[in-house]
Length: 247
Image (cartoon, rainbow, N blue to C red; front, side, top):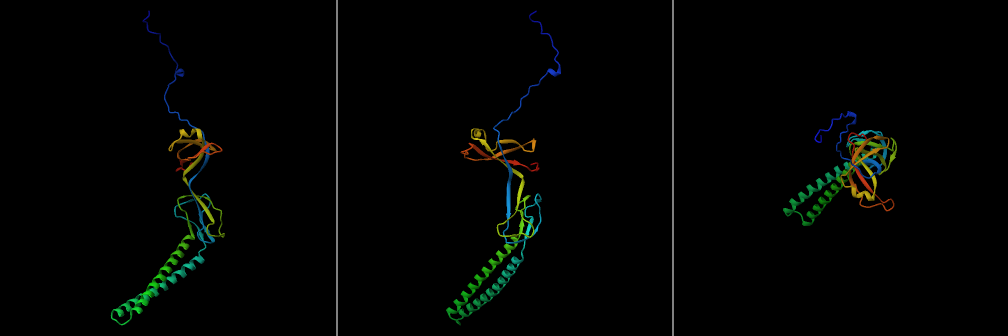
């Protein structure tokens, strides 16, 4: 009969496929170099021999932690001399100030001439200037003393340390490099024809040589506005969180 129901058929479970929807992401391939987003090369701000190195390569450091000590013998002597000069200048300034106050009283009483009062005033002003100069020299000497203790600028890890105890440094010589491994930067290039697919904040998935089984993620932080005239590629700067220090 035309209206008869179609016969039923048994379908085995192996022949059943469930169709679902999923988001498939794709984009241009790229390769690049992964480096710490923040790195600081610590250089000597005072000349002298290295007396102590408190950390080795690969050691973690905290912000402000002492990492090296430069000989402070000559610096300490300069600071002591500056402090003595300041004390002497302050005493002279006190004497000149009291003398000016005394001359002011005598001048008001008509006992001395205007010229004598002016001389006392000039001597007081000159003594105050000498005191200010001595105080400035002491501040500089104390700062140099503080510079003899090299401190980590932020929490991180020591990546290089090209010096040893006993090395004599000049101002500007490198002592060590500290990097912050909690946030990395992937600097990569992409063909210029694909740049229209990329925006600030675009997600980037990548793998690392030696750890190809793990996929890491970051987001585009900056895009170079120019195209390389030779390779026809554009540089991308991708921020990669690394708080667990997997990378």
